[in-house]
Image (cartoon, one colour):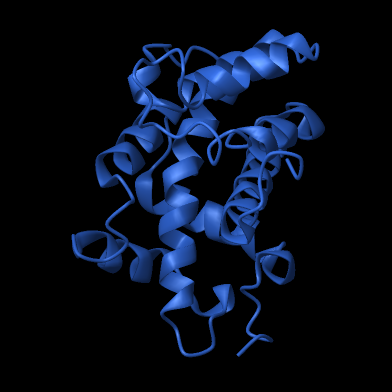
Length: 184
């Protein structure tokens, strides 16, 4: 992650996704370390190979997956990473892949909701406040709301419950994410 990612905000996003993936792995009685790694590494190539390339095979996440495959990363993690980008054309068949897609955009929306709080703390964010911000299309424009809804559907979880679950997972790492209210 650090080898390819210099942006502190992107690193924090990957940490947030890792936290949510670990929590879902525990909920589904899966390997939390493996799922956490998928979340932690899923955007490692984004700075160097953003989605503006000429073809889907030259951009994120396909380029990153090639690098990881060369380094011996397991196929289930690679498939989940490819599946988190709808434009990759790779389906989300495993529960890990569905979870990664479901938490990726949502962690960004949760983070943005916390950052507009005076305290900048996740401890003041709940599902209701995130849903309210979700309706405001001008807020956190980069977050694809349709993907947030689709992710919960594909994972087979209630949207409000999913949002609160991700908030709770992120709260456990609030200090690492700079969202514990101490940096105000």
